[in-house]
Image (cartoon, rainbow, N blue to C red; front, side):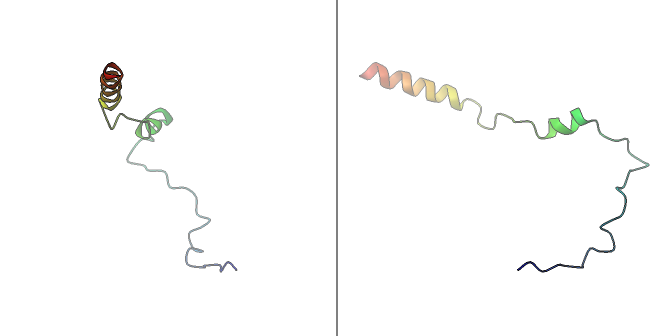
Length: 58
């Protein structure tokens, strides 16, 4: 059974804050923060080289 927590009742219906100091970031810029990146650079090349070496041995 779910229990209702009243801890945030005072803020739950407040309007979303809009900063007066900073301009709002564009959706394009926001999405760039979550874009995939190559964390393992060179990994695919290493696999290719290993596969190539193993195929040559056979």
